[in-house]
Amino acid sequence: MNLGLDLAVAGTVHPFAKMMTGAGGNPGALLQLFVGVPLFLLPHFQAPMIGVVLMHAAAGWILAAVFRKDFGEGSAALFLIVYWLSPWRLYNGGFLWEPSFVFLPAALHFWSCWKLKDGPAFSPSLLLGMSLAASAQMHNSSFLLFAVALAMILKKAIRIDWGGFVSGLVLGSLTLLPTVLYLIGGEGAAARESQGFLGESLLKVYPVVKGLLYWFTLGGLDVVRPLNETVFLKTSSGMLWVRFLQGLCVLSVGISLVSSWWFFKPLWRPQSGGDPKMTWWRTYALWMLLSLVAASALSPIVLQGWQVVIALHAAVIPVVLWVGQKWYKDSPVHRLGLAGYVLLQTVIVITLGLGHPIFRIPETLPPELKAQNERLLDIIPVQ
View 1: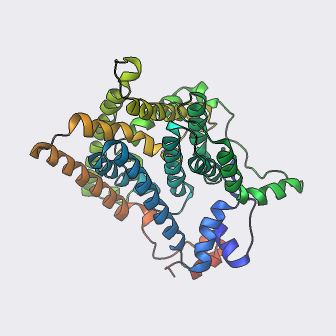
View 2 (view 1 turned 120 degrees about the vertical axis):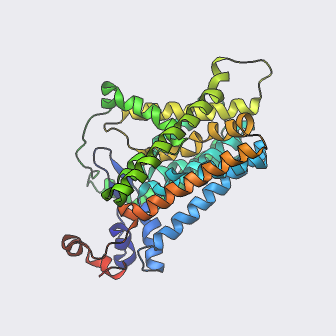
View 3 (view 1 turned 135 degrees about the vertical axis):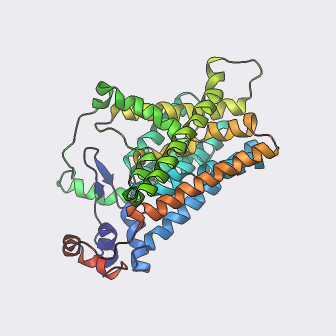
């Protein structure tokens, strides 16, 4: 918020948006523009969230259109249930921080790769380049998008129009000019001291396993940690409710495990007459999974859930296609099961919205926060 206010109030553009402990920082002015321009137009603390909501709506529409094109209306509807109502998306996109901005670049990345599977084209290549350049300025999890794009190019799963791709990189990098000028001026890159070293997580082993598990939890409803931070734990009845929801969240990961096994099985048990369309979808999802594991291994810190939500759109692919092609039949039992899943998603999100401290406006601000952030007092609804 202070970053945006520097632009909206003082007109100051920073070469780095935000520095992250142990994991570098966000170069460029793009993140500052996403926060500062809405604050300039509407000086209210929720103004930047308008842009976040619009970006999420665009991401959902783009991804649902791809599912509709390849697998029909039913799969598009299932995708919206699994992705759009996902507590992962709604929680991480429900307040102002870097992960709330990564969903649209991820969607554009997938759409561009999907369009480029049949041959080089200028516009998808342009958008692919722009999505990569933009995501790098939003969050370090953009590593996943870069790794998948590189793998898909090398495996010839996509074919790039290099003129369009380079043009996209250039356009998406225009907001890096403040960073370039800062470095040319000899200031050196601002950074915090790292908590570890590149590849440290690989030596510890368990962070790599955790990265693999994130693939399955993203495909389910496993938001156990945010539920564990709600105010409902202060009462015995509230604690029972939260533990009940957490148990269902863990069980939902089983759906992701089963669907991923079904989805990826043809890769090591190939059958004659396989569907090229499904093969391509498996290839994209597999490289996202492998990139997620690689990122977990290379990271100097143990990755947390908000650092991997950029892979959500890919992690739900096995779930959507397994439910649509293998599990769901148009019968009362299956319709009831699907309705129960939607109800569980809704209840989890409402519980987080009502109980998580980050969504609860405090009656007063702590004195130290007031002293450090006097500009915020004019745009937030507290005394």
